[in-house]
Length: 156
Image 1 (cartoon, rainbow, N blue to C red):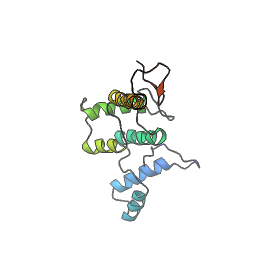
Image 2: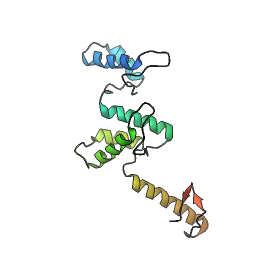
Image 3: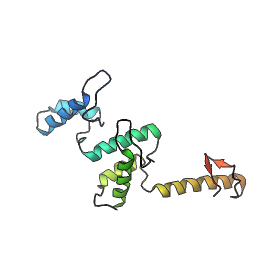
Image 4: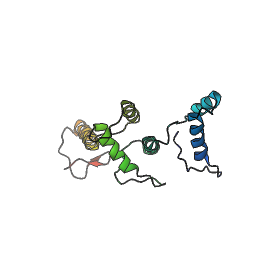
């Protein structure tokens, strides 16, 4: 559960600030084990203030909404978060192409939700599968311009 600090619920409650306070109380040892267990039960993310965790929370939301993480580079969420730029930076970090590398745990979390690291490779594989499907059905890859498989024109 990633709820940003400024999140206000539909009934006007400052849920984000309350959760931020619970994180602080836990760090300070002022939150009982019972309360920690209750918050864990609803998926509390104790490290939400971490910028990576915030971005990952947006990525999870995007995945639930669209069924993939093929976030376009210029995609910005309704509340102004530059998820497209964040995802692009994470792809570079996943590959080790920047000084900010992902931990094994972060990589696993991405893998678990189907994060596409190499978008061009993914698109090629997807188009190849459509071409192979066309071949299986028609016995050829000489595709008329008008023919599409899953909305993809296979004619180059």
